[in-house]
Length: 259
Image (cartoon, helix red, strand yellow):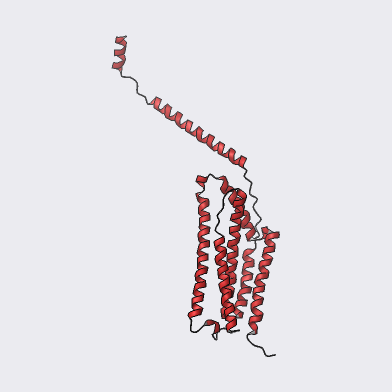
């Protein structure tokens, strides 16, 4: 059997994709069974506590919370638009290039038109998947608290899923230059992601804040506010009494003569 360079695509490309898929399945298992060992589980734990504190604040004081959600939405919208623009640029580049990089001599591997179409469709599908996930991550929910927590955590998970799709798209993008760069990128990315996804910090046990505690806190704040207002009123009244001028001596003598 004669070795052909086209066989590299049949060996390295599925192997690289399988390595990334197995790693993310392992990450999913760790997230479901041992969330404290993953960065995703730690972030979701903090998001739940953040939502709980955010809903305890008065509606007029939630500007900072809305700014955090707005910045996340803006970032998701930006990355979604970027993915859509990259898909359009890739399509225009492949369709209008007279010397296609897919079939050039620098690509060591299969350069048949069928495989070129598979590469193109894979890259576009991955970028469109990124676009959809970042749009889904824009939160839009209302109380009660459990629904808000679910919406925020779901938005964060879709954000993470969109980032993972970008990683897959980057790997497929290197497939343009052959199966060897694609395989090397897959292995390197798995090693880097394993380092970034691992969490060694124990989960912080946030003290639950109940509605009763929140009501007591508001009553205490209102009580202190009333006490400060009364103290200011008493000080202003005393200051006005001490600064009142005594009557003139002539006025006092006139009043005695009249009597």
